[in-house]
Image 1 (cartoon, rainbow, N blue to C red):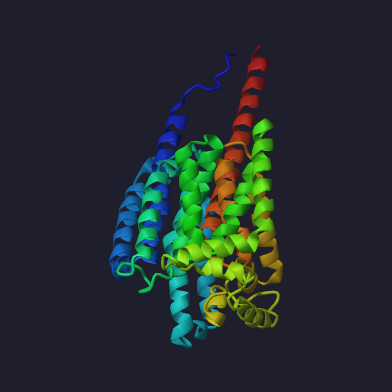
Image 2 (image 1 turned 90 degrees about the vertical axis):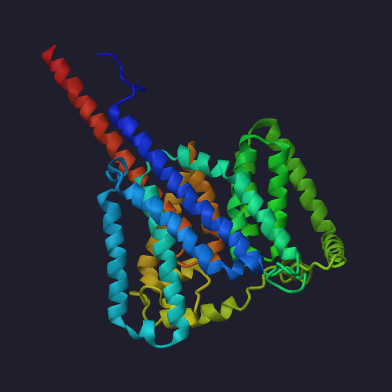
Length: 427
């Protein structure tokens, strides 16, 4: 019997077309809001039209999703476990509300945060989880994201320039406004450029990456810098041969030099910027040895932990962190306060182990899982929440897809063995 490995079948063609369509929608869902957030986070002009821009983004995404869901080649990939998880999420929301509906109506402040978090979950986390769980091959998605780098870089640069112009900036002075939204959006660009550099180090890509890091550094958002630093170390460790040695020596030399002349370098950079009327919150904090200043997060943590310790096994339910302090400011603490220490601990452990397994694959799935893991897990100590962390939900979707693929391969292997046995018996 001749091997049919590599032979194109109707099912494989259907899956390929399905992956291409899903990948396009997923890429648009990641890139379009990122471009909008860059502009809104840096420009007062764009911020004034934020509601209109949000409506445009939502309208475009709704059209894409409606077309996708009416595509039979796509909707057939929606697994029962994905549907079950979606149903469980809404049941969990309902039970949390029934348990203590005062959580949602006691005061305007927490209710606004809960409403915002729920909207983010419905608009970002849930759809991206559904899309990535339906994909079988992630080559198309990763390629689409890499091709969007020029668009992301243009928007990042325009927004940064706007932040320097008093008439366009969020702040009327030329003190660059601290913007988490801008920094998080540019982080996507920086990590994609790092991946591009790993594949092919061209001068344009290197310059674009350096500028993207400068944009984040000067915008005042420190969290993305941690993810970028970890990504650089991880990708460096993945290099091979003489190239790895050369890059390591260059990085080590730069690190030693920066360590020895840390204060002098920062003072020089700050003076240079201030001579042009520009000030950066991050650089000022670094110079004053407050780079790890928690911005009052420890007070929030104390309130949440004290309340959580009253219900350590069951937790406090969906969005309880938002109700207690507005924002939990920690993905891991938010998981604990939502599900309790035991279930929360199991969920965190399973998430990390799954991410490590996915990232270890030598494939587009592995590369994408690595970038997502670097984005979500290090920053989870001081930012994020369970239902609004779209990167974490994307990992959940990839894990479901991986499990379905493994089950399908096992089933195909068993069927092939059964056919071979039947054939040998006839012989």
